[in-house]
Image (cartoon, rainbow, N blue to C red):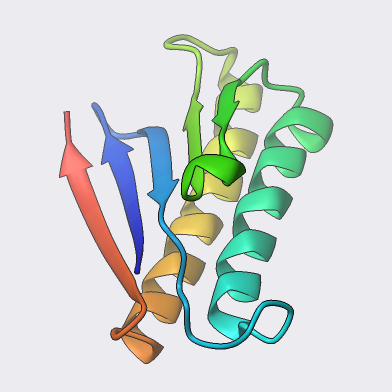
Length: 112
């Protein structure tokens, strides 16, 4: 099962973590894993390439599926707005996948 957790601080998403594997289909045919992977990779790329945010990324796919991303604590206002728009879209997408595929994905929001 994939466990996705989004961490909120004071009015912002600070970080997120995704662990595990969906195991909803054979390797290469697992649409739930593909959906979560696309959301995560697109989010990381958007934060780095579009918003130009120097995020801290830890990825250990071979160790059971693990991705953790942390934003810097302070960003310039326009950069913060771009990053939060990307992250909120990511959180909304994860929530939808978890709702539609609850047997394979859990989604939690934690306030730090």
